[in-house]
Length: 77
Image 1 (tube, rainbow, N blue to C red):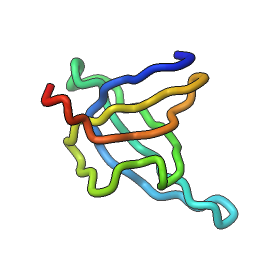
Image 2: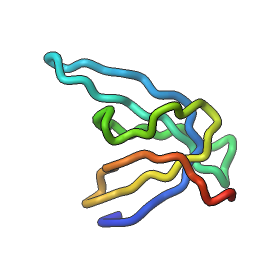
Image 3: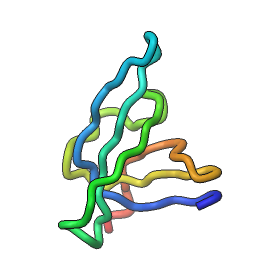
C-alpha cells in the first residue's frame, strides 16, 4: 500500500531499544479474520495513541508501505 489506512485489532505493544533508540512493535490482527495471523508494525512511541489496550480496534496509517501511525478507531465499527 503506497498510502492509506487499514483497520486492525490490537494484540500487544512491545517496546524495543536498538542502540538506545526506543521503538514499539505493535502486534495486530485483521478485524474480519479473528483467528488470522498476527502482524507487526515497528513505529516510534510518538506515533502510537496513548492508553491503547489489547483488544482495541485501531487504525494504521501507511505511507510508502510503512506504518506511520497507530490510532484508536473511533468510528464505532
